Structures are given as C-alpha cells and as structure tokens.
Length: 301
Ligand code: 2X7
Ligand code: FE2
Image (tube, rainbow, N blue to C red; front, side):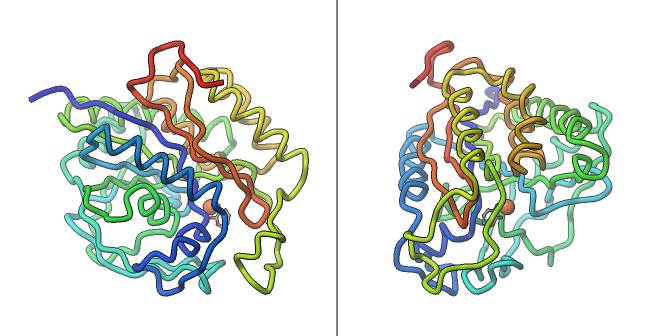
C-alpha cells in the first residue's frame, strides 16, 4: 500500500450564512446572495482541491466540543438534520455522510500513543454539529467523499489556551501518522473563524451587505497580520503568537482546529494561499489553503 499523505490543509470557516447564501438544496432556508468574498474564495479552493484528487476529508470543529478526551466518529454513515442553535432561521441542513472508519480508529489509536485520552463515537443517531457540516459543504457540496470528524476537546477553555494548544499539537501529530498508514490522499479542514466578536442584532434583510462590517478595526488589523504570516510561510511564529492574538480578538482558533492542522502539516514553511477574507455578522473569516504542490519556501505575498 502506498503511503498516505495530506495533500492540503484548509482554514475552512463555518458561518452558516455561507450555506444560506449559496441557497444549498440541503438547507431548508435559501438566501439570495451575500458574503461573496468568502463564497468565491471557497469556489477557488474547490477548484484547487479537484486537481489534488483527494480521497478523504477530515474536519475539526469547535462546535462539537467534548469535555473528556478527543472523540472521533466511527460509524459508517450518519443521516440527519443539523441546526445552528444561534441562527436556526438560516441553517437547518439535511446531511447524509459516509465516514472513513478505519482512519478514524487509527487516529484514536495514534492519539493514545501521544498520551491523549480518546474515544470513538459509535452512536448511530449522533447529530453532526453545524460547524463540521458547513465546512464540509463549502469544500465539497456534493458530499461524494468519505470524512473523518474529530471533536474539539475543551482543554483550551477548561485549562488554558496554551494547554489546549499542547493537546491539539499532539492530536495533529497523531493524525499525520495515522494518515501515512492509511494509504489515503487526505485534506484537513480547520473549521474556524479568525476574530470572533459578533453583533447581537441582525439586519432586517439577513443578506443586506450594507450592514456587514468587522466588529472592531483592531480585529481587522490582527486578522491581516495573521494572514500575512500564513502567506509568508511563518507558521511557527504564528503558533507562538496565537495566545496573544486570541486574547486580543476572541479568535475562534482558540478551540484548536488551526493548531491541530498546522501540527499535522508539520508546521509548514511554505506560503499558504489566501482564497478570500470577509466578515460575517462582524467576525473575521478567511479561506486559506496550504497545498502540498507549493514548493518549500515559495509564497504568494
Ligand atoms: O459559528 C459561527 C461563527 N464561527 C462565526 C460567525 C457566525 C456564526 O457562527
Ligand atoms: Fe463558530
């Protein structure tokens, strides 16, 4: 069996507004437009991924949070309705998804080798979180690839950002080892917004883009700084800056998906491609790809 590999890592934010604006047939509610810079960014990302012939998508989402240990879904299929508890009027999504169970089990096994507490999620009636569903939909709306879904252990909140990052780094290292043994071509999705304060009132027309802006200018400045580091291949420096960035912007990356993905990618020194940046109800979001075919040291700055 050929050695498996991570063919791309994507920062894949999950505001449900994106699926609503796409008027996705799986969603009960259809918008007519909005948030194009992000949606077109996802379209460019999908183009890029098509060429890489990915076989499995793996996602880590802050909206499946587990208190004890890191959980991995290990059932063959799930079918159900994912609802965003804060925005149920725009996101009620009917999903049907196949899982790559052998890889899920291998990740849990390798994570245990790293000293992490792990569990396999085997409940056939489990309901997927809207974060995972949104990121998976935006990357692959036809749902024709099997997936692996990992929970976000709540160590960053229960203990500290730094403790959480230690755990997610181990999970990333374990994920990489498991993928190498799987023989599969895999794409990792870090399902996170960047700066993460949002307005508490919506405009009368949800997709009214005249009401959409960043919550606070300093958040925008921080997001730009972080994106510049990603584009320049400064992932190690970025990881060192994350606790401060999180403190300044309440960044959703606190939950660990980005740390997990950068660790699994081996803390890349090649530049990432920023496909798009935009705000959603005031939060900062970017679709960013790290691609294996980018030469080490190259960047798109
Ligand atoms: O979960 C989210 C998010 N992270 C950002 C913006 C809006 C809604 O939901
Ligand atoms: Fe979120």
